[in-house]
Amino acid sequence: SKKIVDSNSKIKLDIAPFYLSEILTYLKEWMNLKIEQSGKEVIFSVNFDNSCPSNLVFCSDKLKLKQILVNIISNSFKFTDQGFISLIISRESIDDVPYVKFLIQDTGIGMDEATQKRLFEPYYSHNKGKHNKEGCGLGLLISQMMSASLGKPIEVSSIEGQGTKMWFYCEEQNLPHGAKMPSTVIINEFTLKKDEIASFPAKNNSMSYDQANKFTSNNILRPRTDTMRKKGDGILDII
Image (cartoon, rainbow, N blue to C red; front, side, top):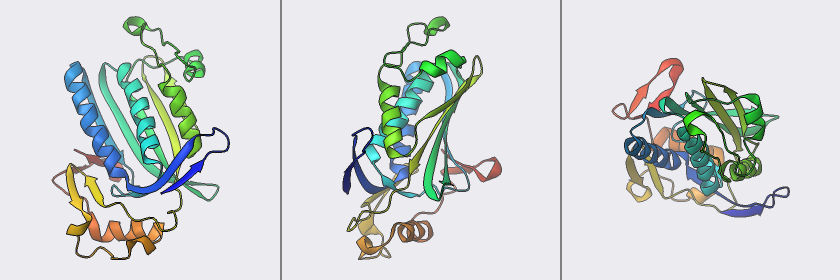
């Protein structure tokens, strides 16, 4: 891995390659448990658009990305009593820099413009109906700082009474020199060990980032029809 310090926020980043599906599998299991324990009539889904393969090898700070997603989704769940919360993942190039975009949208209570402007203030409380004691703590503020360090700050769009969208861009970093590909793949609730893949290159640390993604797409992981459902516009839903 490559350890760097963001010059603006002074946040320490641990850049290393990992399979994005590892985080997504965790989020799916974690949210299913939260929904079951709460009794809420909420459906959580993870979707990829056509620009982003579900078996993407991503090079960034895995733990910080995971924390950002957990904090945003937790906030959505807090203010969503029924309907859905969805995470939509895509890839975009902005000024010739590659990013992965994470969009979280919900059918919760929504926010007015004044609330949106204060959303990332520490301990800000969203006073609305039965949620009048619900606060955001420091989670969204910390997430905003980490998001800016990994790519771009979190953005918000919301309509009161209809729901909220929050999204951020995480830059696809170059594979650190000498870094090895992750040894375990977790996707769609199954695990694949690297030593179980006879065709995996012996000198995987010499592969470029793009080569690694191309190799895993073509040789290691293909969508499983029994665990993935095709939705409209080519979107795949992990189930």
